[in-house]
Length: 236
Ligand code: ATP
Image (cartoon, rainbow, N blue to C red; front, top):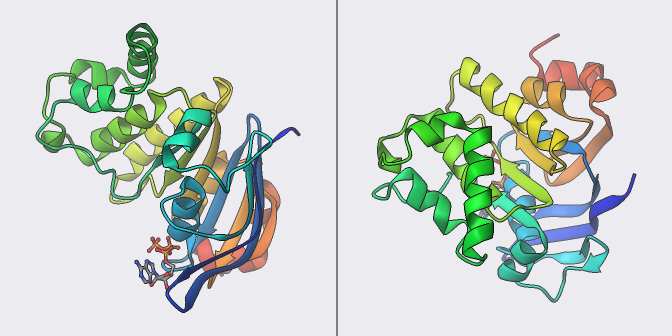
């Protein structure tokens, strides 16, 4: 496996409180890796710090380069992208304008190609390209947030709780698209409370509790772990 993202012994604190304590993880090229865990485990904090939104202590590298000196813009430029938990769309702008915001740093011709790729992945967004983002359904808003993050043609897409607030049928749709991304050569780091859906699609998984990884392995092994089944999959 050629490593794309490497995080080693990372600590992240809010003031004096450490929310993430000594976490290490890797995401390889063409891999879907999931971090599952309960509310408040530190998953969002970790993604935000990898993106450069929060400071961290520890070692991080992306595509073989130390990430410490780079800001958010540098990270986007090298192929890292985050779809935040609350989607953060511009509700009074239409679908296409929101997508184009994801490509403002890249040449017009490349952006046009990106737009076609995103529309091929999410035909619904093409149908609704003139509709205001704030009037889309929750599932369409999640597709738009993912589409905007894909406009810059990332190598690794980080998704924070894409299933949040969505009906199971829409979740299945979103997760199918995540699988298509891997087939198209995009790696995915997926944070989810919906462990069942995440473990079905992921190659590997980390289980996070109280700021630490307590288990890791292939998604198949994690899904059949009795502790995981009891705590996260609703089986006793
Ligand atoms: P969720 O699914 O609810 O987002 P999570 O696993 O992503 O949960 P985080 O949101 O990363 O967890 O929170 C980890 C810990 O850090 C929690 O104890 C939370 O209360 C705390 N925390 C999160 N954001 C802040 C903040 N801005 N200031 C202080 N503490 C915070």
